[in-house]
Amino acid sequence: MLLEQGLTLYRARPDQTGVLMTLVELSRITAFQDDQTAKNAFLAEAASLLETLPDTVEKAYAYSEMGAAMVELNASAIQLPPEAVRYLAESERIQRAKSRCSVCSQKT
Image (cartoon, rainbow, N blue to C red; front, side, top):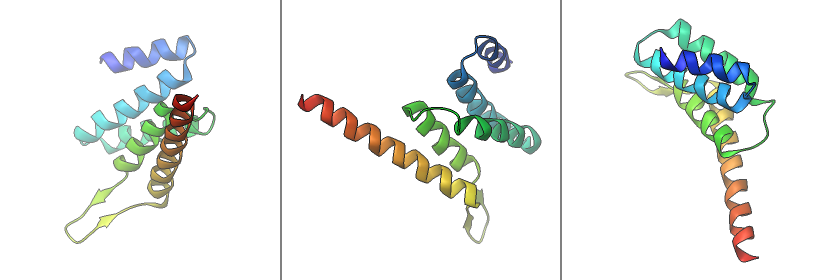
């Protein structure tokens, strides 16, 4: 699979943001393939990387994708695990901070 080859290359560089983004995409693909074991493994590795990276748009995207991946749709309700709520909140925090920074830089 092409993403797995990319993951190997990002790890060799080392490019932690590249590793993170590839893990997030692999978790999405394996979720669509209904491979929950692989999805959870990719999400767990991505979660361990998130805390080590600086706040960037890529990190915010990863948080939102990981939060969305954890949403369980049942016939009766949408269920959010606590990690999903935290990931979505972190994504929003980073996006808001980045938006404020870009507005400030445009004024100068």
